[in-house]
Amino acid sequence: MLVIHCPYCGPRPEPEFAHGGQAHIARPQDPTTTTEDDLLQFLYLRENPRGLFRERWRHARGCGRFFNAIRDTTTDFFVTTYKVGER
Image 1 (cartoon, rainbow, N blue to C red):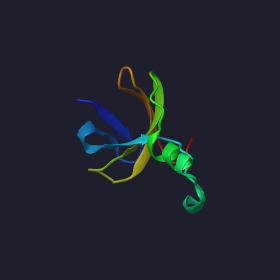
Image 2: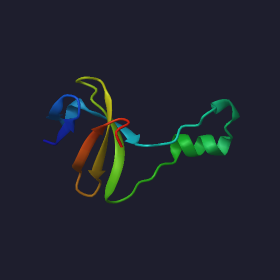
Image 3: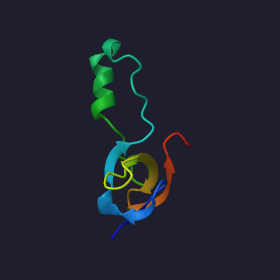
């Protein structure tokens, strides 16, 4: 079983977590003035690289907090996890 290290609770089994997509995405400052193309880019278009990737996760069945992780998408190995706002 895959074990993920929650920066708040410590190591826990993977079924306790929910994937939140790509980390460090710039949200639109004012959604009312955002163009349709910019909104499409923000909502649906994400990178999907091979190798190291920064992701957002939530400890859904634990503390409930969000955190970020650097994960190798080819091996599913978590290089590190860190609290939101740390890096």
